[in-house]
Length: 362
Image (cartoon, rainbow, N blue to C red; front, side, top):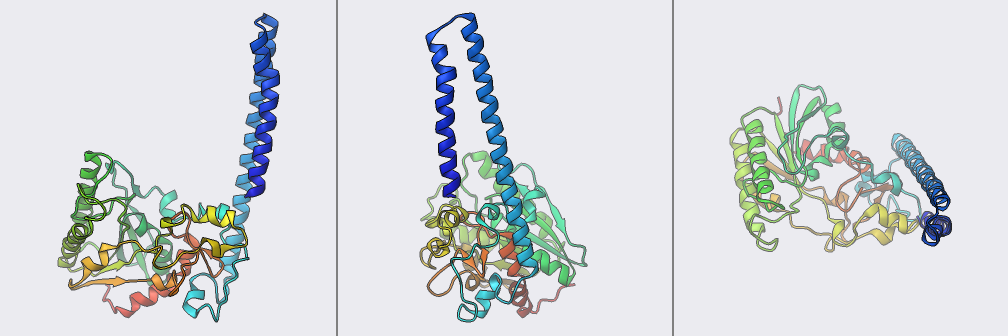
């Protein structure tokens, strides 16, 4: 916040003045052994002081984050009828939004309010040579969650459903890489090749009846290999279409979760925006148009029997606005990913949409 920034500025100037007077100036003026000893002595004291100040600052910041996390957990445990996504479901006339209220998680804690897949190291990270798999739940119905980080941020909601419906969820998650038959443009040719092979590895482990249900989502954050974003959409759709066809041919029902609005088009980091505009969460909102990002999955799924698209956008945007805080809950932990708290608040509504499909899961 502004107070922290002001304190950091004052402390930096004060330490700069002290070290110039007692470290830099004596070193410039004299080279006697005693002067050098004093210089190193003062330098040691200065470094120790800076180190202790940094440690105290880190301790204070960590303490603030932990306190904010406890507040968020208590608010979720005692969630009222308008908490999080429920306020969108009921409508803002029934659940008025108050941009002046500190949201949960608070901005300093929201950045860490992520899917458990992060702390469990469930990601295939660049250069995509490792293929970690994580499992959640102990039910008889087996579910594969496949995609990049925009599949991963649905895991908190899906874990709620898993506990209610007897699911065991196995994750096949990659950082940025979207499993597809379209090759994607990464920083090196090797990364592009590895991402493609990762997608084929996932198919081999999911497309032959190994699971009762496949749930997938992605954000297309890199273009198709050798193309610009502007010319990638049709190629991306084709690669995803044939990928989905392979799943469908194996007889497993597939749920495609439509991607979220993308605040990053106008706001670099949502928690930072909320911290800077404390009491004015409305200043960090966008619109359906300003936060729109192309999503080839929905078009790719058309016409494939057994592949279903669920679009939850109405729980993120009204006809005119996409709030950064909904029902008192911070929606994003960065510029595009859901907080774990908001994801869990979506569980009953995502569950209802899945229920409408009347899938036969055994």
